Image (spheres, rainbow, N blue to C red):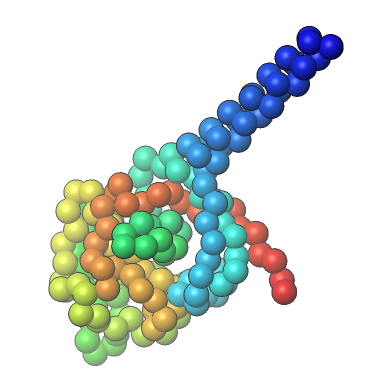
Length: 160
């Protein structure tokens, strides 16, 4: 009886440790709020993100922590210069129009970030896909690598 109880406790402890490592260290869970990432992600979607990324690429969807938590897409990388063309309302990276086929709507300048902006060695520029409905780097500026909590690797959409 004691042996069975110890075995059960050991299984519970090992399971708890595995869950903590998986969801506390390796992965995390986030919830999409709002319309800023439509049509890729919708409000109410649940996302799994991988915390252990060593680098990010343009187009990666990431969880960002600034004054709040946001799910955005990496638009520019360290060392790149970001600007917005006032005529076409297009994102410019190093002077050329960005390849951002996932973007919806015009990319307008906002008052939170002075452009053009050359990103530092550990800075990223993140934007929502629905450009007219997004709070992003145009509002809060470039984000440091340590503010990127991880890359989205899975999506759970519950149709309601």
